[in-house]
Length: 282
Image (tube, rainbow, N blue to C red; front, side, top):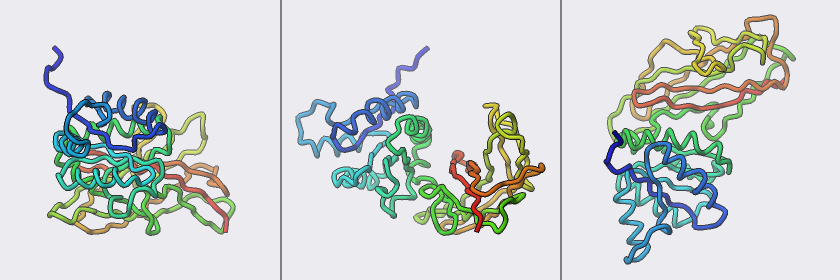
């Protein structure tokens, strides 16, 4: 039997401009529906109090807040800040990464680049996690990842310079950071990397050394899993430098792009960091 319990409520704050209508109607609302929640903006509601009082009311009642920060609209910033002050799970959206201020980047956020097809699957995961684990969701992604001092979330393109036009492998150092400072929370996690499965697309057998590889149920990808478990105290850092190699005669060549996803397995949920390594000859 279908449950008669009310669905979790996702209150959406974003600029009331026509350019955002498709993102809201075709992206945010269907994503919330797929995640088992229902979404509303204040301009869809009928009320008698002032609009600001209504917004306060809806933020306090909502199970999760979705805030589109595109364009750095001051009203959206103010309302997102109010939601954070109440301890609400807040999911930040933006077309461009630079619209997320530095001190908010450790909160859950989605850079969708104006593409609804990129927004929906990520938002479904975020909303589902927020309504199923509200306490964990208010703290955001506890693990952030950096390469050469730049966030992998906002700078997913990594240049790998080499003296040779061909090479058998490359090593990238990933710096993991526990962004939680307000309470004692040791983060326990494992890491893995998703790559394209060897098949018709490529004849090269690729492997992370010292990682165990598993074919994935989707039939098109491989998970290379590090068997080690890492622990990070609040505010602590950890460096891991996996070695990615070509095991066949074929080699990585100049200007080749290698697309991968770093998957961080935490006790709350897996966190994905897609990135691309470009091989460049010095």
